[in-house]
Length: 367
Image 1: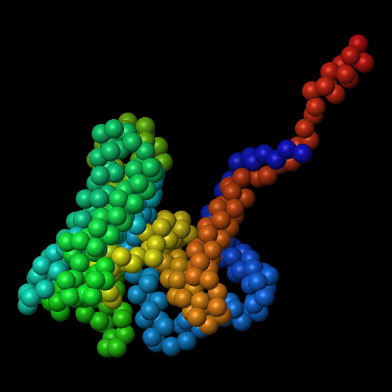
Image 2: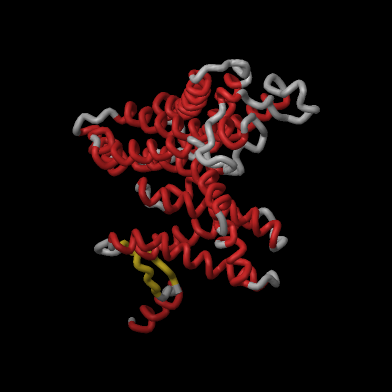
């Protein structure tokens, strides 16, 4: 039996939007089966993972804290992915944003000016954009594959951050821990609610949501980006400058990832540490596709992904599950999403294979 995939004559738009919900449902069912195999009560463990973290206001605030960097990175990825520019480097751009903002913040700790925070945020945003600009330069100047260059730059960014916290940015009074000094109050994002960690980066995420939605849905630049993604030759025929659009899309993506990174260090963390990101940039890739590259869909997907991070920590403590449970659920969501998309876009066909020898024998018998 041979299996082949044939494109469906007409794609269902409703099914394309229903696919993420189906993928989430299949992930829950698979997770329950996995917990049962591991000897944990499935429903109770799912409750620990997905319900208990939101039992109080503190849990909701922590959900927002984890969702903000994922949302910012995913919104930037939505821009480049609409142009079919496959930036896998949001994680590195986030780390460089955190590093650039921290390098400035530790040198202006004694400042007592409202401009200190603005400069730190600007440094982080520009740092992320510059790191993405390297991918744009390599792609437009040398036609280098942006998938390879962006993912390799992630490792360079991580090692630069590790070098900084073990070297020039290391706190001399930090008992030899690899971390920077705590930032001054002037370079810290204010908390929205006293006693909770949710911070003013929430407003940055809302602003980015509106800007990206207007860019992709209402602006001529967004139209050019989408045309570039649909057909690069057609974009060239109508006079759209593809190299310029590549630069613009990657710079926007990198700037939002850099803003996510600097918002982390100036917000809930308050200093530069090696564990700035538990993989927010990589999770944002799944979120972007789970949200169908639509800013509104990405908001809900970001909250789901943040809940998996929060629930994974809770399950680790309450149910003695491994820390990797978060990555496992992220992988299952992406796998089921891709599987659902394949079945929505293509129709599987089974055909019997005919052996060449048998065919030749039948021809000889006929003669």
